Length: 233
Image (cartoon, rainbow, N blue to C red; front, side):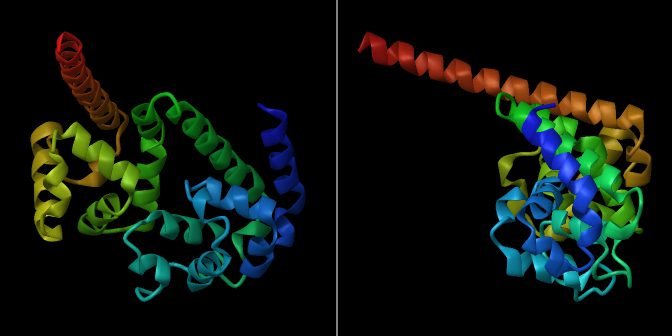
């Protein structure tokens, strides 16, 4: 509700329709900051050529840049804007300003929360992230790969399942196999379409936060012991 954010939202509502091409978008820093911020990609604000290529390539062709990047937030961004997928970009749709600014404000809220609790930020964005996965991939295998390519979702799933930090060093197909196995064990299904229900999302988030808190307390305890020993010395 800050004046800065509300002014930015008003600016998008008044000007996003002028961004008929990807060049129009990347040339306007305010519009670009909202588009990128809505998908947690604000750090790319100065990488205009790269962002333009992601947008222009779209998401339909397997060779599109966003489809070849491991971070699937770029694919979600490209699909949402529609520059490479449709003859007329989604920025021309009447409900697009509401969609993009609502997502942007949610992301900024999560970012603010994350300054004091990074894990809570991940939990807040989990439902929206899974919805993006359902939209972007059709087969269950492709959806799991998308989860693995989305840092925030990957962190929540790995944390909720209690997987070690070394998990990411395994062969990608082995990672998929283990994620499906743990999903079956914890949730009773390995189908992400079934995982994406309120009951299962709640269980995953609860497991993730509990395990994260336990880890933090363990680390804090170890730190306190070290400080005590150092104080004694």
